[in-house]
Image (cartoon, rainbow, N blue to C red; front, side, top):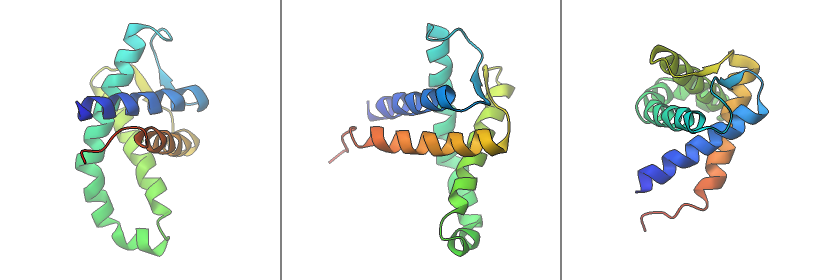
Length: 126
């Protein structure tokens, strides 16, 4: 149940990014069942990418992250959003991020902030 709630929260965060950032697009009729289905699928892909690829990239880039006092994590988050867009394209899911900057960079910031805010309202296991 917690996984489903987190996936829905990620879909809402992606929806906010689509609304505010030019260059992040869902090619489906707005607010239709297909539109929200695409957002849920992309949120699922984004969650899998963040669970599998992101820890590896963070481990490899540990020195750069420390050197930049964590600012390099913004670049990693943007790259994870671009990777999600590429995977969605390969699976014929109508979600696309145009470029690293400004679309993926600012989109990743918005997704992170909205996910964090929504996470404050999602109860932990404890």
